[in-house]
Image 1 (cartoon, one colour):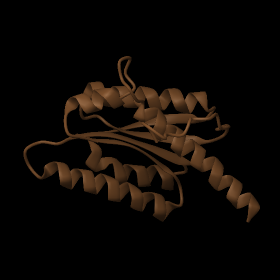
Image 2 (cartoon, helix red, strand yellow):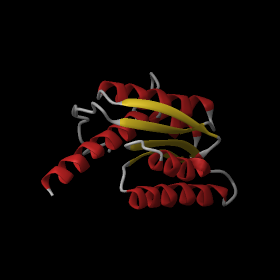
Image 3 (cartoon, rainbow, N blue to C red):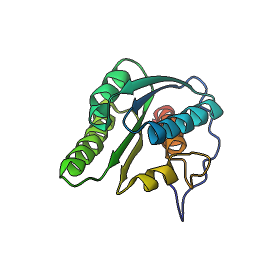
Length: 159
């Protein structure tokens, strides 16, 4: 959703939409930037959000599923995974990505994907929505989640 060719984050009416922001706590600075961006965007769209902290990205799918099954309309999943010298990066990245995809499909509810998979810390700082960042992936993930709820509701009315 970002970079060249990215769509604008037009305003959608998020009134009455309840969002769980499931936020990994690993890497305080980057994770904090993602969370702040997601919260700002949910508020800007008129939706409401509750933050649900989890230790890291591996835990995102199970908590996201519980939140959606518990009545939230959407989840914004935020996490930071930085490549290291072992295969751990690939395992955690795949588990988080495929797990969150399964959660969205199984529940029929949107999961905004704000999990940064990075080669180095600077890439995360550039995408975290911080004052010097080039992108705000937390806000983008929140916008995607709320916007998709609106789209799904419109489709249900038309059906």
